[in-house]
Structure formats: structure tokens, C-alpha cells
Image (cartoon, rainbow, N blue to C red; front, side, top):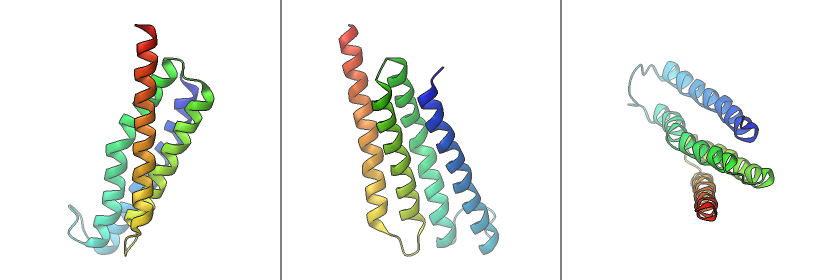
Length: 129
């Protein structure tokens, strides 16, 4: 069981569904059935797509950190950083006009979480070799 990873996967899963509903609403409002031919459909679609591109690998890193014994407090720091990063990024990219500072901050937090988790895994692996 990976309770810390499960907590953040659950939270992020609910947010993923919320992002998907924003895409559906925009598609209905602007009558775009397929693709993103309207800029106000493109924004929520990319927020949702970007989330789908980064979150699975970030959760894999978090799970591997948990399996390899990273302390719970450190796992929670990583999880909160990931959630904050993804929420800020999605809010920044979905706005019209775009709120670039939130998008950049969200990306930075996501990359920080992934980089720290990757470094922690390298350290944990090296300690056991």
C-alpha cells in the first residue's frame, strides 16, 4: 500500500475530471466537436492535456520515493508541490488573456517536484548499491 501517493493521486484524479469538464463545457459553448479550432477551446484543452502529460510520471516518481523509504513528511512536501504546481499551471493557461506568471510558477513547481523526487531516488538507489 502506498497511502501518501494514493492521497495525491486521488486529489489529482478529481482535478483531472474537473479540467475535463471545462473542456466539455467549452466545446459545447463554442460548438467544437473535435480539435481545438477556437482559442477559447484550445486553452482548457491544453490545460487538461498538459496535466495528462506530466502528472502520471510525477506520480510514478512519488510512488517510487514512497516504496524506497523516503520519509512521509518529504513525500507530502513533494505531493503538495505537485498539486499546487498543476493547479497554478492550469489556472494560468486556461485564462483569456493568459495569466503567464501563474503558468510559469506552476511549471516551475512541477519541475521542482519532479527534479527533487528524481534526485531523491538516485540518492536512495545509490545508498543501497
